[in-house]
Length: 337
Image (cartoon, rainbow, N blue to C red):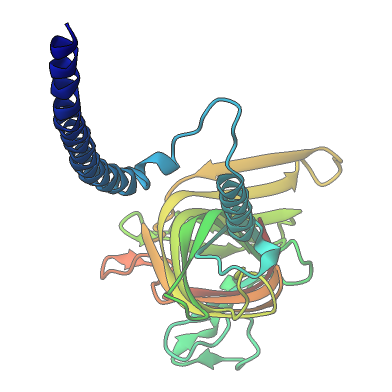
């Protein structure tokens, strides 16, 4: 028995270092494998981190507009507020004329009133008889029957109504082009003893005659003509609005006759206080088309204007008996905006 125990103990002593070596070798292998796996994982983690960082950088500009619930970016609010302020200031500059913005179109209407007279075409001598007693440029003094009554402002008069006018600025300059549509009213007053008629002693004569009868007294005797006109003027005004300061204008007009009539007011008899108002509507051989030149000078909305007709007031012809007169006028006016 003793021999068996000794042999077993010897076997155990010899096997113990072998088992310890195998255990140590197995633990070393496990540790080395653990170290190797951790390096791979670290590399994998590093790669994933790099990919994620790149994706985050790509998504950063797109994610600026994304607002989470309960979050309001302060920078966007500031930009929106500044944009609104700029828009409001721009609209104020455009709409408010007092801010100094240049107006491109100036619109309105105007009224004028003043005196009117006939002028001879040759020397532009008014037909009021002060140029000579017997003859005026070879014309018999009998034509003094066409003299105009200027004793009252409402006698021979010219008035116009610009139904509308538009002034267009030429670029950024102080020059404007003014046009529109207007009505003009010519009133020729022939006093108390002259009547405008188309009756002549001879039936073959055709035209217009100024018949003077000193024995017949009238209260009014007038020849009135209305034209529809289109004016065209080059206007200088240095203000931004086009209606302030000094205004100077040169241009012309072209008109189409709308109506011509005579008015006579006379008593029924020498002893009667009742009057007869006689109106005759006819062309009276006045020209259908009228045209001429004009000039104006003004301050603010008020202006003075002169016109001279280049066309004759009456039709001219070999078979027509009509005087060769033109019309000139001087008026005061006002512009309404």
